[in-house]
Amino acid sequence: MADRSTNAWYPTAAYLYVLHLDGPALAWEYLRRHPGYRRDWLRRRPRPDLAQAWGLRLLEDPALDARDAHPIWFPDHDTVLQLYPDADPLPNAAVFEFWRIPGHKQLTHDGKRLVLVSRGLRYRVRLVLAPGLAEGMPYLYAVRACLTPRASYRTILAELDKLVTEDGFAPAAVARSRPTPSALLELHTLQALDATLAGASLRETAAGVFGAEAVAAGWYTDGGLRSRVRRLVRRGQSLMRGGYRRLTQID
Image (tube, rainbow, N blue to C red):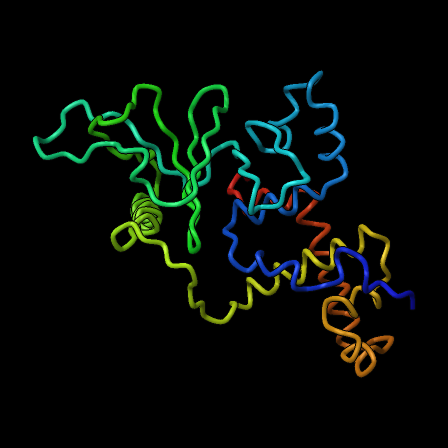
C-alpha cells in the first residue's frame, strides 16, 4: 500500500469545517468536486448560461470551499430570507440597517437581486434584498405561498434566531456539542470522495478516514470496514453527480 499520508485528502482534520455546514453549503462541497463543473468554470466567459444547468444562478469558483464560497442556488433554498420595503409601516417599525446585521457580510448581485450572506461562528444566514429596499427603510419578510406554511414559518424563525446575538457580540470561542452522526457521515463521505478522485484504493482511503490501525485490525475481503468505505465512496459519487440537488431542495 502506497504512503498517502502527504496527500491533501489524508488528514481528517482538514475536513472538520464540514461538521458545521448546512444543506446548501454541503451541496456546494459536492458540486465543486464534479469534473464537469470544474470544466464549465474554466470556460464560463464564452458560456454565461452554464450556471442554471448545475442549479446555480451564477457559477462559483470550485477552488473555494464552503467557508469562502457563497453559491447562489436556483431556486432559492427555504432558508433564504427575502426582505422587502414595508408599504404600510407602523410608527415604531424596525428599519433596515445594513451594518447592524451581525457577522461577516458578503454582497453579490445575481443579475436580478442583491444577495447578502452573513456568516458568524455559529451560523450562516442568506438574505435577498428587494431592489427598492434602502438603508433606514421599514421592511418586512416575504414568505412564498405553499401547501405547508407552518413549516415555512418555522424555518424562517430558525433563520432569524441565528441573527440574534447578545449586544451584537460574537465570542472568540464557542463550545460545541459532539458532532451528530449525520455530520460525521458528510465528513467521511467527502474525505472518501476526495481520496477516490485522487486515485486512492479503498484500503488507502480507509487508512486516511479511519486510521491505519483500524485497517490493520479489520480489513478483510468481506469485512465491515471495507464495505463501509465502499458505501462512502458510492455515496460521495452519487451526491457529486447530482444528488447534491436534494441538499438544496432543487429537486
